[in-house]
Image 1 (cartoon, rainbow, N blue to C red):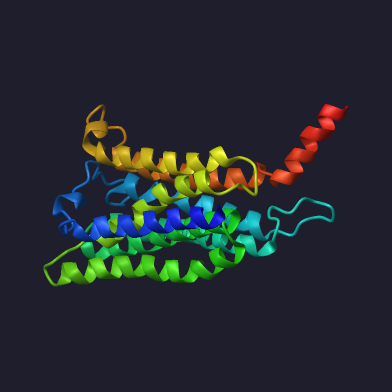
Image 2 (cartoon, rainbow, N blue to C red; image 1 turned 30 degrees about the horizontal axis):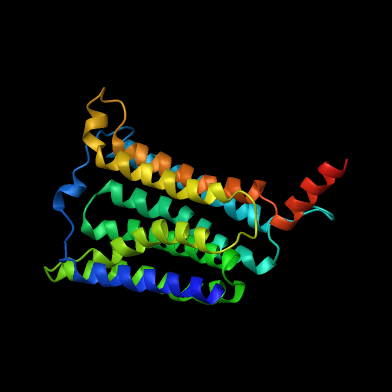
Length: 269
């Protein structure tokens, strides 16, 4: 049965890759860099789109502090196996670095600066996926996949950048790296048993991130409602909330076996 589930996941991966490969290439739309809110405050151009990235730094720092802080004797560890922290460590590092890359991009939006925004984002996407593989499929496989997946993510951005420089911009690989975890994680949740409680939080992380991208699509429409805040600024805030939700999940969840023991003890009492 487990072998069948692995084949289903492999078939999903290969079929989605095939579909993307048959799609026509699509370059970066130059209009993407024309954000609705380009106001300058305190001498900072595109100020709200720049400073809203501080939340990524905050969430990333909080996540890393949670993973590596010294715990008192008897305090519950956040993971069954200590090695499980590494994909989440890379995830929160990617989130923190996104604050730097995205702020740098929004100071002077263009393809040349956008690459620094997208590189740390891909690291966060793929490492979160690796964390789910570690917890639900195989600790060994997930840890082994982490670094190749990071290489794939970085390569997808570099490929887009090189194709843009040669006048044949192609965002397909980058788009796939971003979309695959949003589809693959729910499939893994359906196919493989949980090691920890709060599975719904895994889905919430993806759902909140999708909501962030909806705000981005309506950048100008939201800004035109009162010229207070733009959809892209809200995207940053909601995307940071998505990362924070992952941290919240890690703080609150317990191993499934431990949760079952608690329920059993309550019934006995």
